[in-house]
Image 1 (tube, rainbow, N blue to C red):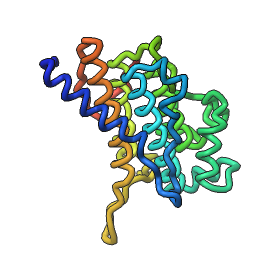
Image 2: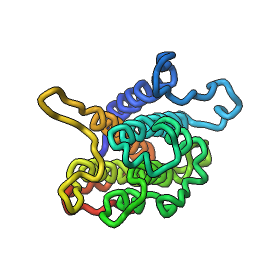
Image 3: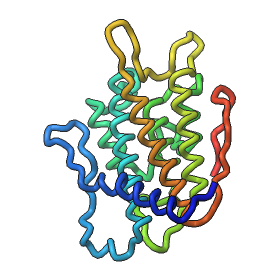
Image 4: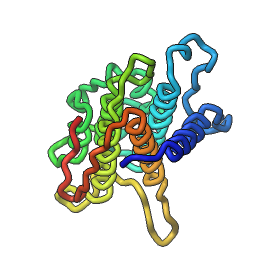
Length: 244
């Protein structure tokens, strides 16, 4: 799918406003989930970055912030998974994972990463922390999709198809969260809640933010590099995670 020069400029301007505006966002002082602090745009590092590199920086940071929120919420909805760790609270566990990440190799989840870790979270024989396996799997998959980096410079290259495939894999993971069940018919992990007293769709919204930002960035990269994205139609019940 190709765009005219005028539409391409509009797309890039729109993405710039959407992603770069996040740099100016400040979380409330009493927020339980403050966004990561963005680097000073006047720092020397910024001279080694293109506009696309800065967009990638923001996209990765915002997606990481969403994963921290999701991990906290998953532990609070599934306290039995938190009990498999030595952390005293969901917040302590999240900080430990994202700040002392040990190169993302966690023995308690068999040091699994990427789609292997995501799949492991829904295997009936897995006895480890399913929340940890799911979130570490998604985060390491995103890092791999972005060329193995979390900060980007002129010399870095990101394949737009990998970013697009990562978004599709998250869609599969979200489907599994709502549909994959154990031998007793119970969901492996509780997320959204709809009952007579109210609706809680916050998980769906947070995952949607990640998928949307990945799709938008993949489309923009494809326009920049003039590479056509291979779009894959998947049936969620039988879908396999896309490789890259």
